[in-house]
Length: 445
Ligand SMILES: *Cc1c(COP(=O)(O)O)cnc(C)c1O
Image (cartoon, rainbow, N blue to C red):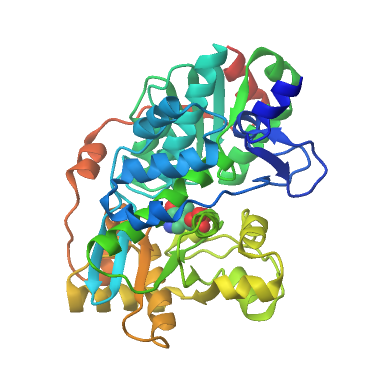
């Protein structure tokens, strides 16, 4: 017993932020997603990386950085060689840092298979789940409802993963052509259901399935939702990579990061990197008119509201699901939080003006989410010495929002072959009503 205690005591143990569910291991947190009390899983401790890691970081590749960071966080749960394979299977693309103007850099997070930053989280989650499943020889069935971007990243992330079958529900007519093709053209272990209803109907069907005793007894149902801790961890990797690339390019001055935010997973991951020792002067939480968090940062009052539609629609969130995590990671007390995070927001007019102005001045094309971040960064750095390095995160390739981009810039833009090839593929989806009885019958057949 003594031994068991000693070898286990450094494993990642996670608690629920509502403190009404038992602590869990990493593996349990990954498969459960959400604690039963509807809180969020958080690790008790986040380790600090040694100074030597930061001294030599400019010589490390993205994969090497990802491995070192994972090892510090998960190295007691998973042997190093297994962890290396998990990382190498998930992180198969770069996050280049590109200078747009002097001391203003964009961190391009859209070089993965779905061309949005959600690839980092979805692929790492898939890789980690597949590792745990191999050990237990179990099979699982993942159900996801998507309003667009998450589904594509999850579909790509789990494609051909042994032991995992994925069913994705999306609302008919409510996702873009590119998004629909990303969900419906893979085949294999990925099935797309085109639901005759809204995103809320899709979510309701998935929730009902998780609560249905018959389905639960027949299948190992699992969720892949965005608050899964295994999606947050890999999003910290690219903050370290940005710092490494700045150092490599000879920029040793302080860094501020501006993060275009919706559910605040991305920004929470930045705060994890900072807790692990990454030197960051400030994080800017940039939103569209759904500015619940910038309001909180300005006033100390958190007031969720119904979400409003904008052209940066992946950030149309009125009650961010990672808000509590962001608070805990930034320092719990309001006075402490605002030392780490400041807010900014843009309406659609300002977003479009920014997209056009940056394109005209530099030739750089940004998606609406990225433009919100650029503008937030500029507002903040205008008050600082010129030598501060400003990094804004680009969360999606502009071609995923082609109509808005071409209309705003008043010109045709280049579409990468990755996306044009996808548009040429044939859609395969199963039509589904919004009645749970039909969905259940389909799953049981
Ligand atoms: C999901 C998403 C966001 C918001 O990220 P959060 O982690 O939810 O804050 C921003 N931009 C794009 C393109 C996204 O898909």
